[in-house]
Length: 122
Image 1: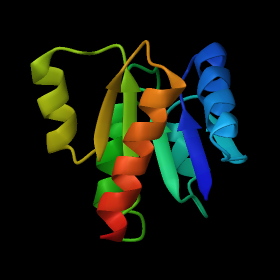
Image 2: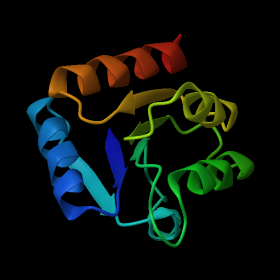
Image 3: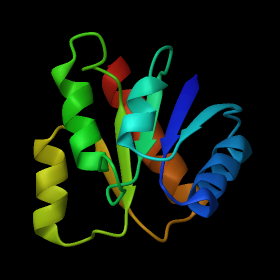
Image 4: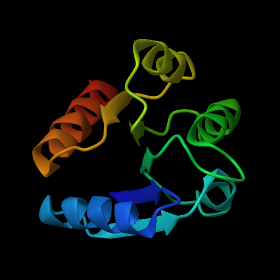
């Protein structure tokens, strides 16, 4: 499974990438914002994106992915500091598959990924 990790923070990308590797997912591409991610989306199986980024936010990126017939079914996990209910509702309305509030543990990341994979393969 090929992951696309989208975050403007190199440190956060490294944390997510290392968490994925610890879970056995070694095929990971990184992008620094939504625009960069759209340019790298070909061949991706799963997206993990931040919300707060320059150029194109994770929410704008999610909406762009969902608007494209070729990619609209890609699983998207949003990992962000935005934890208020209205933000979570807005992200779910944009059709992210699940939502994690930073900081998180690798176990939480694993549980969210597993939940999404089970729901799309059901």
